Image (cartoon, rainbow, N blue to C red):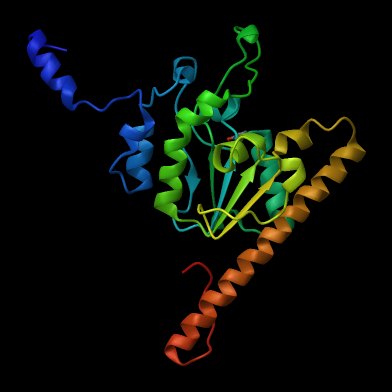
Length: 248
Ligand code: URA
């Protein structure tokens, strides 16, 4: 930067504080502007070894928001969430459950890839984020929820659930149950797809996939109920009974 030390000091007083996600997200009310701000986030150290911030993606009007853990290797390189094996599996399960991927928004609890240090220079293995990293990233998730106001919020795995529902939340005990939360009308938690990908044999993988699809089918039913109620109240309002198109 050019200019005297005094000028630089004056300038930095107006520069966004990249070390605080809540400062960067403050006052931004569109996903586009949040995504732009998140690109410079340095709220924890993960940005140092990651290629880029991987922000959420999908229709801003989506009724269902899925929250994963954090971008993997593929996502880190592509700059897009769920484009690797976990994303393919989610796509397959959504299809089976009858949820159109265009009706959803997908994001992560942590928005930078975390690489296992021992694997430097070799395969880019993902490492689970620490609680402090999850907390540092939470303002982005809050901002996405505030902006999108999804009717249905789905935590995929323990990291997302702990970020949004508290450290004591147990996915294995409460999976598939409706959770009372101020975050959205319907909040659910289910397993992360990576647990299915890690299944020890084809039979257990098949069983785990079926259980995951069953959780998604329950979410699809909730979506249908919401649409029915929405269409009903619109029809009542007009004194008619014609159905509105979904997600208008
Ligand atoms: N796993 C996640 O939780 N999120 C991604 O974006 C990819 C894999």
